[in-house]
Image 1 (cartoon, one colour):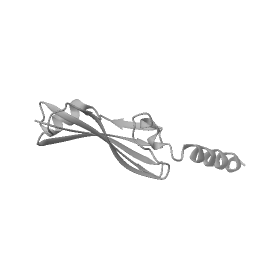
Image 2 (tube, helix red, strand yellow):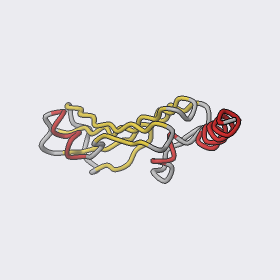
Image 3 (spheres, one colour):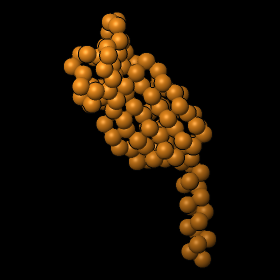
Image 4 (tube, rainbow, N blue to C red):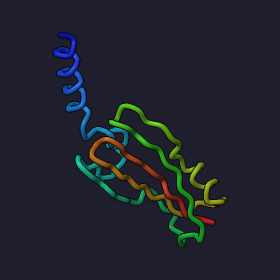
Length: 109
């Protein structure tokens, strides 16, 4: 009897959360996609030429329910050894609404 209650509730939860992993970044200006997404867009530029160094910082989300990581410009710059940022891009990869990865990619000197 307990299975008759638990299984439909579990199925409803999975159906409601499918495609939701990228919901954590839906207002960031990148295409989230329902089944798959691998997109990149520009966020900011200083107007200078792109610097020779690149750094990246990422965060991950599972089902749009559990999200962890540090996708900040400061962390990306530190990871690339950059002291002067000239460009900031963002990248999103969404795998079937189960796992989504959002990254900030900075370039500079």
